[in-house]
Image (tube, rainbow over all chains, first blue to last red; front, side, top):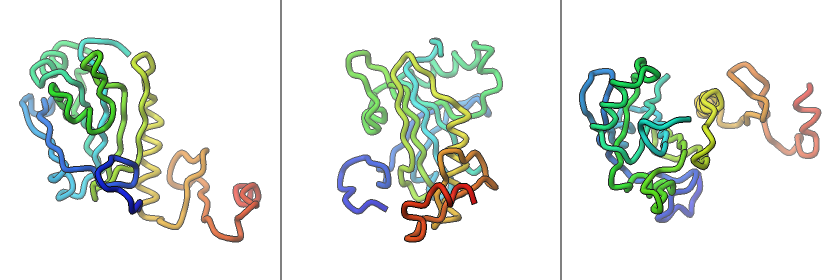
Amino acid sequence: MIESCENRLQLGCEVPDFEIDTYEPSIKNFGKISLEEQKTAGKWTILFFYPADFTFV
Amino acid sequence: MGADIVTVSTDTQFVHLAWQRHEKELAEVQYSMGADPTGNLSRLFGVYDDTSGLALRGTFIINPAGILMNSEVNFYNMGRNIDELMRKFKANLYLAKKTDEGCPSKWQEEGDKTLKPGPDMVGRVHEALNE
C-alpha cells in the first residue's frame, strides 16, 4: 500500500477509526456504525454520502 | 456479500427514521442510515460543503483492514450509478484474492478476462486482452 499516508485521507491509506449514529430500518431502531468494529468483524464498509433526506435524485 | 453499506447525510438519525418510514421508495431499505449533523465525517472524507451544510454525493469503499480502496464524488445534480458501485465492489473482492491481477475497464464480474501485469505485457496489452 501507499507509504506516505501521514495525516491525509488518500486511497491506499488507513481511514482513521470513526463512529457514527445511525437509524437501522432492519430493527426499526437507532444504532451505531464503528469502523473499528467493522474491522474486527472482517467486513468491508461502503460509505454513501448524499445531500439531504426528503430530496430527489 | 461481506459488506455493510452505510448511507450518510448531515440529517439527524430522527430525520432518517421519519424519511424511511414515510417514503415508499425506501420501504425495502435494510442498510444503516448514518447521521452526520456536525459534518465531521463528511469533512474527514472531503465531501462537506460548508456553504450549504450538506454532503456532496461521495462513495467510499473501505476494506476490512480499514484501507480506503475507492472514491467517487459527484456534484448535487448528478446521481451515482449503483451498478457501477456493485461492479467496483465485486472487483475489489476478486482482486483481494488475486493480488497479482488487474481488472480491465470492461471487467464486470468474476470469470471475465483479467490482466496479469509483467514485463512481457509492456506495449502488448492489446494482445493480452484479445488472447
